[in-house]
Amino acid sequence: MPVLNEKIPFYETLLRQLKDDNLSNTANSLAAELNVEANNLVKSDHLYSLYSKYGYNQSSEGFNEPSKLNALLESIHGGNYGSDDSCIPDLSEKVLDKQIQQRSQLAQGSPKWLTVWITGEFAMQSACLSSAISSDSRLLAVGGVGGLATVTPLVEETKRSKRKPSPEGGTTVVGHTGNVTALSFHPHKPLLISGGEDNRILLHEISAFGVVQRVNIIKHIREVSIINSLCVHPCGDFVLAGTSSSILRMYDLASGKCYTCANAWGQHEPGGINGVAVTIGGAMIATAGQDGVIKVWDAKSLSPIHSFAQSHRGFGVQNVSFDASQNYILSSGLDGVTRLWDLRKQRQVISVGGRIPRPCIANLAIFLQDQRMIGVASVYQGVPNSAAQFYSELQIHSLLDGSVTLNLSEAHSVYPVWSINTYCDELSLITCSDDGTTRTFRLLEA
Image 1 (spheres, one colour):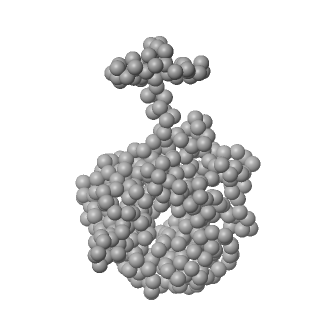
Image 2 (cartoon, helix red, strand yellow; image 1 turned 90 degrees about the vertical axis):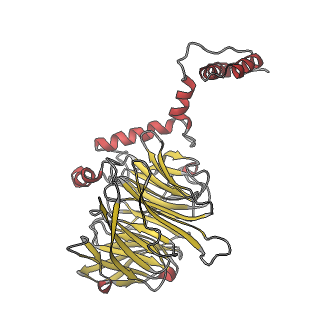
Image 3 (cartoon, rainbow, N blue to C red; image 1 turned 45 degrees about the vertical axis):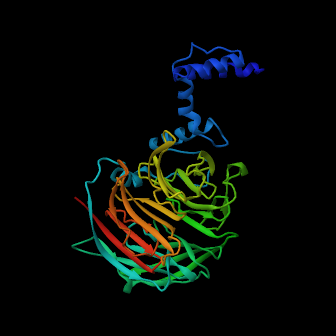
């Protein structure tokens, strides 16, 4: 069998790896067929070490991507990122220091067990599909079927929880003609950004003093695709949109101008972007693609810097989120599995779920306030010939070992949970369900 000269070093290293793995018969057979010898000058397990470092990086930029990602991570923690010619300004470290210090330690110890209090509940006239909480945890927005959405104040409590929803002080948000599938609050201003199946992004100005007095539409952005996910950049000037198109979009909130990646090869394959997230410092963006790929982007240039291909075994990725340290990504896919990824090593750390032998319809996960636990909501097809159309799981997992610390699957009876959220300053979980109710749970660590 002829071997190209430039491939001889590779086969020599491969033969050495086979011998390191005690596969001598296989190595001898291959050596005889190729007429080459094992390279005994390389270190033991040299080929495997190369694979461990680079093999999982299957994106179009090859070996260059890990170094780009690591360089960006180093610059983030050093206080700078990106080039100076971008339209996104650098954020002040002083503004973010307190938030990062409070929530930057991932999985430092694990809770023994949790108890739960239901601290609030209110109902809409339609199924709840999406939700968002303002950065100060004073407003809760919920989007539903048929264009219906509400903004509800979160009033202070004294005994069981710091706050609870006050539906009597809320108001209805109008403007959409299709299902409201995405919501995001502005980090500094009383603005709510909503997106829906009517292919529109709306900016709503909120007047709230204890109660939500009114919500007015101040800008209307027409899209060509259904809006799946929205996330306002921490600088407050831009909103990132994941749509049924495969192209990541970033809109200037003042002008409505749209920015995208200049390189078509860097985008997701057709199928759409189901989720979009940005780091607390604004340097990196992550997108969850229906093509089964998680992409990490430089927020300044909107250029892709790393891809986790086949991150959920080829199934669509439903959502992504960054932890407060900006070193980890949490993703959930239609394989029913939620995975934690280490950006510094570009590999999976832990996975939970995937035990239900039925097709997964939706899968969502979020970091809870203490960054040691995650909330996971999964929806599966119901058992054939049964009355229940769906089977839903709602659980709290420890990030230390993936164990279930609390099972809330019966919180909405047989109705699936389509959206989950958490307060920024309290160990809590907010659920929005197909039964039209939104419930808030206070989690108490023992």
